[in-house]
Amino acid sequence: MNVKTGTICTGGFTMDYFRFGHGDKPLVILPGLSVQSILPLAGAVAQEYAVMWDAFTAFVPERRREPPAGYTVGNMARDAVAAMEALGLRDICLFGASQGGMIALDVAVGRPDLVQKAAVASTALCMTPESTAVIRRWIREAEHGDGEGLYLAFGQAVYPPAVFEAYKPALQAAGQSVTQQELRRFIRLARAAEGYDCRARIGAIRCPLFAAGSVDDGVFGPGAVRGIIEAFAARPGFSYHVYKGFGHAAYDTAPDFRDRLYAFFTGN
Image 1 (cartoon, rainbow, N blue to C red):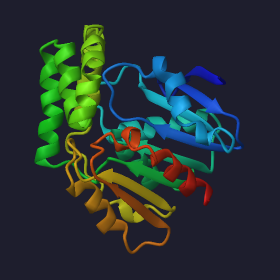
Image 2: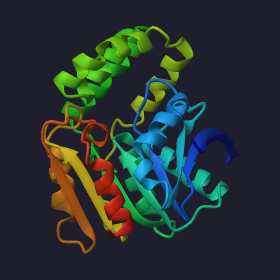
Image 3: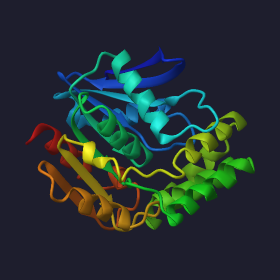
Image 4: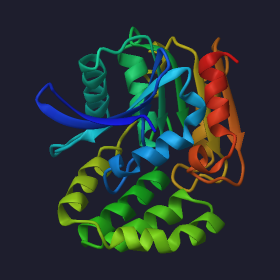
Protein backbone atom coordinates (compact mmCIF):
# COMPACT_ATOMS: atom_id res chain seq x y z
CA MET A 1 0.00 0.00 0.00
CA ASN A 2 1.49 3.32 -1.10
CA VAL A 3 1.13 5.29 2.16
CA LYS A 4 3.91 7.68 3.11
CA THR A 5 4.40 9.79 6.23
CA GLY A 6 6.22 13.08 6.50
CA THR A 7 6.84 16.14 8.64
CA ILE A 8 6.36 19.78 7.72
CA CYS A 9 8.45 22.43 9.47
CA THR A 10 7.22 25.88 8.50
CA GLY A 11 6.01 29.12 10.05
CA GLY A 12 7.51 28.33 13.42
CA PHE A 13 5.69 25.04 13.94
CA THR A 14 6.03 21.34 13.14
CA MET A 15 3.20 19.25 11.71
CA ASP A 16 3.08 15.55 10.80
CA TYR A 17 1.10 14.23 7.87
CA PHE A 18 0.59 11.20 5.68
CA ARG A 19 -0.25 10.84 2.02
CA PHE A 20 -1.73 8.17 -0.21
CA GLY A 21 -2.99 7.71 -3.74
CA HIS A 22 -1.39 8.36 -7.11
CA GLY A 23 -3.85 10.64 -8.91
CA ASP A 24 -3.02 14.01 -10.41
CA LYS A 25 -5.51 16.00 -8.30
CA PRO A 26 -4.51 17.05 -4.77
CA LEU A 27 -7.00 16.20 -2.02
CA VAL A 28 -6.48 17.53 1.51
CA ILE A 29 -8.35 15.75 4.30
CA LEU A 30 -8.60 17.61 7.61
CA PRO A 31 -9.55 15.09 10.31
CA GLY A 32 -11.60 15.84 13.37
CA LEU A 33 -10.39 16.23 16.92
CA SER A 34 -8.59 13.11 18.16
CA VAL A 35 -7.16 12.04 21.51
CA GLN A 36 -3.97 10.61 20.01
CA SER A 37 -2.05 10.84 16.75
CA ILE A 38 -3.79 9.37 13.72
CA LEU A 39 -0.49 8.46 12.03
CA PRO A 40 -0.64 4.85 13.30
CA LEU A 41 -4.00 4.58 11.52
CA ALA A 42 -2.70 5.91 8.20
CA GLY A 43 -3.00 2.57 6.44
CA ALA A 44 -6.55 2.02 7.63
CA VAL A 45 -7.59 5.56 6.60
CA ALA A 46 -6.03 5.11 3.18
CA GLN A 47 -7.90 1.84 2.73
CA GLU A 48 -11.19 3.48 3.67
CA TYR A 49 -10.58 6.09 0.95
CA ALA A 50 -9.53 3.54 -1.67
CA VAL A 51 -12.06 5.00 -4.11
CA MET A 52 -9.92 8.17 -4.24
CA TRP A 53 -6.59 6.56 -5.11
CA ASP A 54 -6.68 6.70 -8.91
CA ALA A 55 -7.98 10.25 -9.23
CA PHE A 56 -6.28 11.92 -6.26
CA THR A 57 -3.15 12.15 -4.19
CA ALA A 58 -4.48 12.73 -0.70
CA PHE A 59 -2.67 14.59 2.09
CA VAL A 60 -3.84 14.19 5.70
CA PRO A 61 -2.17 16.69 8.06
CA GLU A 62 -2.44 16.47 11.82
CA ARG A 63 -2.60 19.53 14.05
CA ARG A 64 0.72 21.14 14.94
CA ARG A 65 2.73 19.07 17.40
CA GLU A 66 2.73 21.62 20.21
CA PRO A 67 -0.36 23.84 20.12
CA PRO A 68 0.11 26.98 22.24
CA ALA A 69 -2.26 28.18 24.94
CA GLY A 70 -5.19 30.04 23.41
CA TYR A 71 -4.97 28.09 20.15
CA THR A 72 -8.08 28.61 18.00
CA VAL A 73 -9.75 27.09 14.95
CA GLY A 74 -8.59 30.17 13.06
CA ASN A 75 -5.00 29.38 14.06
CA MET A 76 -5.52 25.81 12.86
CA ALA A 77 -6.74 27.09 9.50
CA ARG A 78 -3.68 29.29 9.11
CA ASP A 79 -1.48 26.31 9.99
CA ALA A 80 -3.29 24.17 7.42
CA VAL A 81 -2.74 26.81 4.73
CA ALA A 82 0.95 27.08 5.64
CA ALA A 83 1.24 23.29 5.37
CA MET A 84 -0.46 23.22 1.96
CA GLU A 85 1.85 25.94 0.70
CA ALA A 86 4.90 24.13 2.09
CA LEU A 87 3.80 21.02 0.18
CA GLY A 88 3.32 23.08 -2.99
CA LEU A 89 -0.40 22.34 -3.25
CA ARG A 90 -2.88 24.47 -5.19
CA ASP A 91 -6.33 24.10 -6.74
CA ILE A 92 -7.09 21.54 -4.06
CA CYS A 93 -10.16 19.54 -3.21
CA LEU A 94 -10.60 20.10 0.53
CA PHE A 95 -12.52 17.85 2.92
CA GLY A 96 -12.91 18.42 6.65
CA ALA A 97 -14.76 16.32 9.22
CA SER A 98 -16.07 17.62 12.56
CA GLN A 99 -13.52 20.12 13.90
CA GLY A 100 -11.70 19.57 10.60
CA GLY A 101 -14.84 20.84 8.89
CA MET A 102 -14.63 24.07 10.87
CA ILE A 103 -11.01 24.43 9.76
CA ALA A 104 -11.99 23.70 6.14
CA LEU A 105 -14.65 26.42 6.20
CA ASP A 106 -12.11 28.91 7.56
CA VAL A 107 -9.61 27.93 4.86
CA ALA A 108 -12.25 28.35 2.15
CA VAL A 109 -13.15 31.77 3.58
CA GLY A 110 -9.60 33.06 3.92
CA ARG A 111 -7.88 31.48 0.93
CA PRO A 112 -10.36 30.93 -1.90
CA ASP A 113 -7.42 30.92 -4.33
CA LEU A 114 -6.25 27.58 -2.89
CA VAL A 115 -9.56 25.72 -2.83
CA GLN A 116 -11.28 24.47 -5.96
CA LYS A 117 -13.99 22.48 -4.17
CA ALA A 118 -14.75 21.99 -0.47
CA ALA A 119 -16.71 19.39 1.45
CA VAL A 120 -17.55 19.23 5.14
CA ALA A 121 -19.18 16.53 7.25
CA SER A 122 -20.60 16.49 10.76
CA THR A 123 -19.55 20.04 11.44
CA ALA A 124 -21.20 23.32 12.38
CA LEU A 125 -21.10 26.99 11.49
CA CYS A 126 -20.96 27.84 15.18
CA MET A 127 -20.75 26.27 18.60
CA THR A 128 -23.93 26.13 20.69
CA PRO A 129 -24.30 25.72 24.47
CA GLU A 130 -25.15 22.04 23.87
CA SER A 131 -22.10 21.29 21.70
CA THR A 132 -19.88 23.29 24.05
CA ALA A 133 -21.11 21.12 26.95
CA VAL A 134 -20.08 17.97 25.07
CA ILE A 135 -16.59 19.32 24.42
CA ARG A 136 -16.22 20.47 28.02
CA ARG A 137 -17.12 16.99 29.28
CA TRP A 138 -14.23 15.62 27.25
CA ILE A 139 -11.95 18.33 28.61
CA ARG A 140 -12.90 17.44 32.21
CA GLU A 141 -12.02 13.79 31.64
CA ALA A 142 -8.66 14.84 30.20
CA GLU A 143 -8.01 17.27 33.06
CA HIS A 144 -8.65 14.43 35.53
CA GLY A 145 -6.01 12.38 33.73
CA ASP A 146 -8.56 9.72 32.80
CA GLY A 147 -7.63 8.49 29.33
CA GLU A 148 -10.11 5.63 29.42
CA GLY A 149 -12.94 7.88 30.60
CA LEU A 150 -12.09 10.36 27.84
CA TYR A 151 -12.15 7.70 25.13
CA LEU A 152 -15.48 6.35 26.39
CA ALA A 153 -17.08 9.81 26.63
CA PHE A 154 -15.71 10.64 23.20
CA GLY A 155 -16.96 7.41 21.64
CA GLN A 156 -20.39 7.66 23.23
CA ALA A 157 -20.92 11.11 21.72
CA VAL A 158 -19.45 10.29 18.32
CA TYR A 159 -20.90 6.85 17.51
CA PRO A 160 -24.44 5.47 17.34
CA PRO A 161 -25.25 3.27 20.39
CA ALA A 162 -24.73 -0.09 18.63
CA VAL A 163 -21.42 1.00 17.14
CA PHE A 164 -20.27 2.42 20.47
CA GLU A 165 -20.98 -0.89 22.24
CA ALA A 166 -19.08 -2.79 19.54
CA TYR A 167 -16.10 -0.42 19.80
CA LYS A 168 -16.18 -0.11 23.60
CA PRO A 169 -13.43 -2.69 24.36
CA ALA A 170 -11.12 -1.09 21.77
CA LEU A 171 -11.83 2.38 23.17
CA GLN A 172 -11.06 1.20 26.69
CA ALA A 173 -7.80 -0.37 25.53
CA ALA A 174 -6.81 2.79 23.66
CA GLY A 175 -7.60 4.89 26.71
CA GLN A 176 -5.11 2.94 28.80
CA SER A 177 -2.30 3.94 26.44
CA VAL A 178 -2.89 7.70 26.60
CA THR A 179 -0.04 9.73 28.06
CA GLN A 180 -0.29 12.87 30.15
CA GLN A 181 1.37 14.81 27.35
CA GLU A 182 -1.33 13.61 24.94
CA LEU A 183 -4.04 14.66 27.38
CA ARG A 184 -2.57 18.14 27.73
CA ARG A 185 -2.38 18.49 23.94
CA PHE A 186 -5.96 17.26 23.59
CA ILE A 187 -7.21 19.87 26.05
CA ARG A 188 -5.72 22.71 24.01
CA LEU A 189 -7.08 21.31 20.75
CA ALA A 190 -10.54 20.78 22.23
CA ARG A 191 -10.67 24.26 23.75
CA ALA A 192 -9.92 25.70 20.31
CA ALA A 193 -13.51 24.94 19.27
CA GLU A 194 -15.07 27.00 22.06
CA GLY A 195 -16.58 30.20 20.75
CA TYR A 196 -16.21 29.21 17.10
CA ASP A 197 -18.63 31.10 14.85
CA CYS A 198 -18.08 31.62 11.12
CA ARG A 199 -21.63 32.63 10.18
CA ALA A 200 -20.70 36.23 9.43
CA ARG A 201 -17.85 35.16 7.15
CA ILE A 202 -19.24 32.38 4.97
CA GLY A 203 -20.27 34.87 2.29
CA ALA A 204 -16.61 34.82 1.24
CA ILE A 205 -16.85 31.14 0.21
CA ARG A 206 -17.13 31.01 -3.57
CA CYS A 207 -16.19 27.43 -4.44
CA PRO A 208 -18.69 24.57 -4.82
CA LEU A 209 -19.52 23.09 -1.41
CA PHE A 210 -20.87 19.71 -0.30
CA ALA A 211 -22.13 19.19 3.26
CA ALA A 212 -23.18 16.00 5.02
CA GLY A 213 -24.37 15.24 8.50
CA SER A 214 -26.70 13.05 10.53
CA VAL A 215 -29.82 14.10 12.40
CA ASP A 216 -28.64 12.01 15.36
CA ASP A 217 -25.31 13.84 15.67
CA GLY A 218 -24.38 13.50 19.34
CA VAL A 219 -21.84 16.32 19.29
CA PHE A 220 -23.36 19.19 17.29
CA GLY A 221 -27.00 18.05 17.25
CA PRO A 222 -29.46 17.93 14.33
CA GLY A 223 -29.47 21.69 13.93
CA ALA A 224 -25.87 21.82 12.72
CA VAL A 225 -26.31 20.28 9.28
CA ARG A 226 -29.66 22.04 8.88
CA GLY A 227 -27.97 25.36 9.63
CA ILE A 228 -25.41 24.75 6.90
CA ILE A 229 -28.14 23.78 4.44
CA GLU A 230 -30.13 26.93 5.21
CA ALA A 231 -27.05 29.14 4.91
CA PHE A 232 -25.95 27.78 1.53
CA ALA A 233 -29.20 26.53 -0.05
CA ALA A 234 -29.50 29.42 -2.52
CA ARG A 235 -25.88 29.31 -3.66
CA PRO A 236 -24.80 27.77 -6.96
CA GLY A 237 -22.68 24.65 -6.58
CA PHE A 238 -24.05 23.68 -3.17
CA SER A 239 -25.21 20.11 -2.51
CA TYR A 240 -25.84 18.11 0.65
CA HIS A 241 -26.91 14.81 2.11
CA VAL A 242 -28.55 14.22 5.49
CA TYR A 243 -28.19 10.82 7.19
CA LYS A 244 -30.20 9.23 9.95
CA GLY A 245 -28.90 6.57 12.30
CA PHE A 246 -25.17 7.05 11.66
CA GLY A 247 -24.35 9.48 14.46
CA HIS A 248 -21.73 12.22 14.50
CA ALA A 249 -19.21 9.92 12.80
CA ALA A 250 -21.42 9.47 9.72
CA TYR A 251 -18.34 10.23 7.61
CA ASP A 252 -16.96 6.91 8.96
CA THR A 253 -20.08 4.88 9.71
CA ALA A 254 -22.21 5.58 6.60
CA PRO A 255 -21.06 3.04 3.98
CA ASP A 256 -21.82 5.31 1.02
CA PHE A 257 -20.23 8.50 2.31
CA ARG A 258 -16.88 8.23 0.56
CA ASP A 259 -18.62 7.41 -2.71
CA ARG A 260 -20.68 10.58 -2.33
CA LEU A 261 -17.51 12.55 -1.60
CA TYR A 262 -15.80 11.11 -4.67
CA ALA A 263 -18.80 11.92 -6.87
CA PHE A 264 -18.82 15.52 -5.67
CA PHE A 265 -15.11 16.09 -6.19
CA THR A 266 -14.97 14.40 -9.60
CA GLY A 267 -18.38 15.45 -10.91
CA ASN A 268 -19.30 11.80 -11.56
